[in-house]
Image (cartoon, rainbow, N blue to C red; front, top):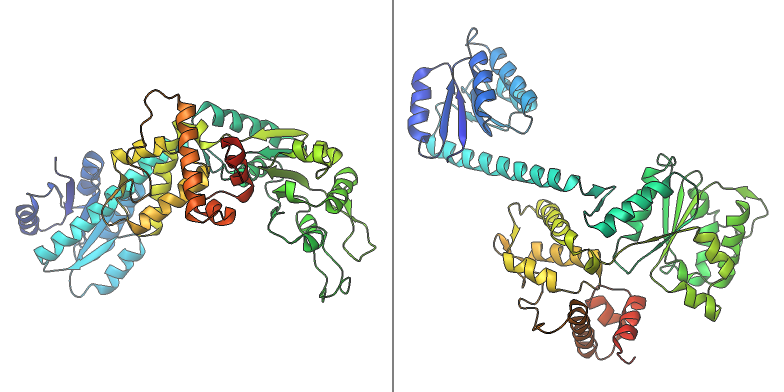
Amino acid sequence: MNPTLLIVDDDEEIRTQMKWGLAEEYEIAQAFDRPSAIERFRVHQPLVVLLDLGLPPHPNAPDEGLSTLSEILEIEPKTKVVIASGQGERENTLQAIGSGAYDFMSKPIDMDELQLLLKRCFHVAQLEREYLDMKRQTQADAFEGMVGSSKPMQAVFDTIRKVATSDASVMILGESGTGKEVAARAIHQQSNRRNEAFVAINCSAIPENLLESELFGHEKGSFTGAHAQHIGKIEQSKGGTLFLDEIGEVPLPVQVKLLRFLQEGYIERVGGRETIQVNSRILAATNADLKKGMTDGSFREDFYFRLAVIELNLPALRDREADLSVIATALLQRFAIENSKEGLSFAKKTFTSMYQHPWTGNVRELQNRIKRAVIMCDGKTISPEDMELSGSGGTVIGQTLKEARENLERELVELALKKHRGSITAAASELSVSRPTFYELMDRLGIER
């Protein structure tokens, strides 16, 4: 069935000509004044309206047309209203555009030009409607930027709601790419600190000799290069939430200072003597085995128990396959809009390949592959090749799901190591995982370092 176009014009001859020229492409609804236009708009709910500004009872003034425009957009703001204006009505046309009209055409109207404009209007309107439908569909499964209808993710959402109401420290555990910072932000947004600062620091990204200064701040002249006073991340988070990512990388001397802060709520800047009270909620995250660190002495046991009053475990993407298609579709819509490539969709075989892929980099890997596919694809359909996924997934008959995943993970890790001649950094980068995660994969899969 053809989409409906509403034509609003007080000239019956013009309406007849328009209907004759456009009837093959569209179902035409007609109106000659504001009341009939609003009545037909409510009945037909067209995506696009062609509107003349000069309507009775004042056909020589734009008032009725502008009022019609306002009422239509009030009923449905996404409607594409095209203004049909006379040559001497430039000021009125600009006023209509400022009031929300999508575009305009000058009378007498060129039908070929109108056909092109209407096609664009309907295309954009349909894309917006599909996007909103998708957004409404996923909204029920969304929580503070996290998406998931699977049982593991619903359990995560429930835990976040519970822990957010307290000031207890939370340790967020999960593989690289599972969304630990997103979870931390969700806790902050659900808490009574939501209107204060959320300050995040990746402890593994800062050189060991600078980490203490970055966390606690320093006074001018406290060390070589300290040319001015520096306020640290802890102080910046005053009244809000401090998120310590990759907490397992913090050296022991800094662990001692952080432990003292957690116990007493006070800090001193490097080189300073002033005691500064800081009331912050502390959230930490790691993909490392901290219990192993406690055993070998690289992580303090008392520090761990101060941080991990509550543990929040984020599931790997392979353990929440029910969420995969919803997350992928949402990411595709987002990156398509960002890159002006609206209308993209996944081929059916792409979803098959996605379900067969091990996703060692979890949601971050999925995000990176879809972003690349949107940029590199030529057509309107994302293929497995666009996402650099295997189309067949290999032969898995006779294997359990766990065995198939492990075999595919082993193959990918070994291929990456072979390709990069044993370089852990390069191989981990190709698989979109951190070096600690890559080492864990090698150990779990029995691959010699």
